[in-house]
Image (tube, rainbow, N blue to C red; front, side):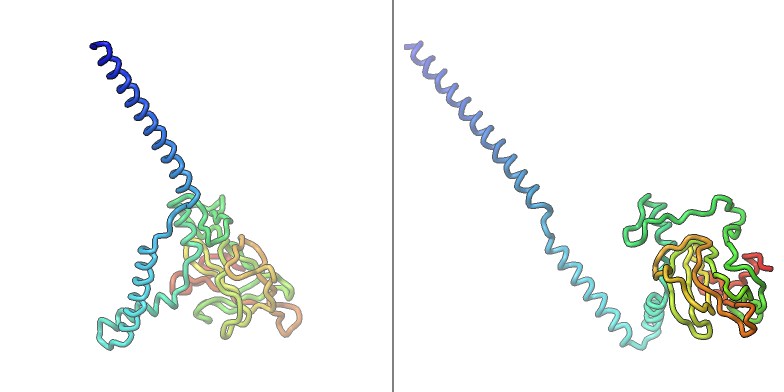
Length: 248
């Protein structure tokens, strides 16, 4: 009788153990299958977060509209700030340099070409890496012009970039005619105006290395010389290029 009871208990324990193993194997199989299905599906779309972004955008838009409808002194300050943001030029080169310093990777929205300082440049004198835009003489000084200088060169001379950077303007400016503006990684800008023609390889937002041709000078009436306009801008202020670049 005792042997029969022991045999029944042993059989029951064996069946119980076998059932647990089956359950474990089933859960392991179904779990791996679910994992594979999740991988196939990929990341889920977060509709709540997307809706939150849309609502925040609408609130900002409505807030700006209300701000410009109000005539209070506080609103005037806010209006001035928004107008300044819209009229300010985005610092492409400076933003790219900051991004690379922080994360070590090129910014995807900008060309992957690296902007590196000249090998002979030193921290004591950062103006050493400015090259001459063209060989010639200054015939209208910064004091006369107030924003830049006028240079006289050979009648077929090229106008070159004085420093590497990104093209942020190509077109005509009042009193300057054909003009190209280059933005450098220190936030400064170099302006090249009074150009007879602009090189077809110069494209908006393209990267330009130092001493690369931008265009041709405008021939003077004497038929022997040419001229062009050159300026340097730091922030909102034009500076005398003659104090940065040695001209004849």
